[in-house]
Amino acid sequence: MSTDLIIGLTKAVLILGLLLTNTILLIWLERKLVAGMQSRVGPDRAGPFGILQTVADAIKLLLKEQILPLKADRAMYLLAPILALVPSFLIFMIIPLGPSIDLVIQGESVNVDLVGANINVGVLFFLAISSIAVYSVVLAGWSSGSKYPLLGGVRASAQMISYEAAMGLALVPVILYSGSMSMTDIVQSQSGFLSSPIPILDSIVGFIPKWNIFPQFIAFAIFFIASIAEVNRAPFDLVEAEQELVGGFHTEYSGFRFAMFFLAEYINMFNMCAITATFFLGGWLGPTFSGFLPPFISAFMPAVWLGVKTFSLLFIYVWIRATLPRLRYDQLMELGWKRLIPISLVWLLLSSIVLGVREFGLPWS
Image (cartoon, rainbow, N blue to C red):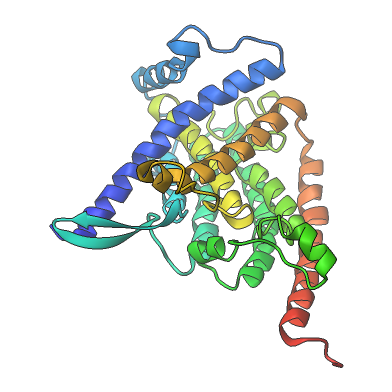
């Protein structure tokens, strides 16, 4: 077996295991955090601190009967959960978890990138794959043969299109600022600290990391809000508005097929936070304490820093869910089309002007 094949299969297996295990932890963490914010106990019976409650729920869903509605389009009905779950795994494949490392495989020294697929157009790949999720929602609603899931699917298509436009526009200034569409290059461009041509200011900002969140704070706010709407999280979970649509686009799904939608939602939430950390918070960049910690532990510190940044953003996701009420649908669409998209266009124009002046100088100089 070739070395490249061994590395590729190992990465795929590790990423699959990481995402599945992380989902169990994330669901438990969200339940405990929301319970604490609402003065409740949360899961505390199954396993230590209730950690096995998610495993019990997964086993219950696996053992439930698989129902196929009489009026459902069988092929599309079965395809929709797959289209929801597979892109969520593919998106995580392009997120760099750390710098490249040297390993010895089959007696051969190999330099391995700590990323599933290091492609030079990672941003375009992310936008393309994330847009596939809307097809799963629309197909699930349409193929169920019921009016309520169809309404949820139509709402999802309108919502995702509007917020994907804002999310894509928010990434353009980051691409211009970093000078690359490679996820690895975007992380590397954020290494070091800020500098200023004014000596007094340079002594102040010299302690601030050169993360994109500081020069691109408007783009970060737009991208973060759009990412919440993209994964249908509160307060943008209109496609699953129980009061209006019974249960949303997956009303007619049960058992393992419903679990696939549920799993895809939490994996996408984790992916969006990891992507946000990669674009705006320096990704895996951070001190490794190489002279203080053992070399084995120090080598894993980049992945630890990415995890800390990702779970910090996930905490904000949960905090927002426990705090804000669900928006009306007209408010949801107005925020996307009349607020985020125009602001992102103006910020793109301003960022282009600033970068142009920095690169080529003023036109009259």
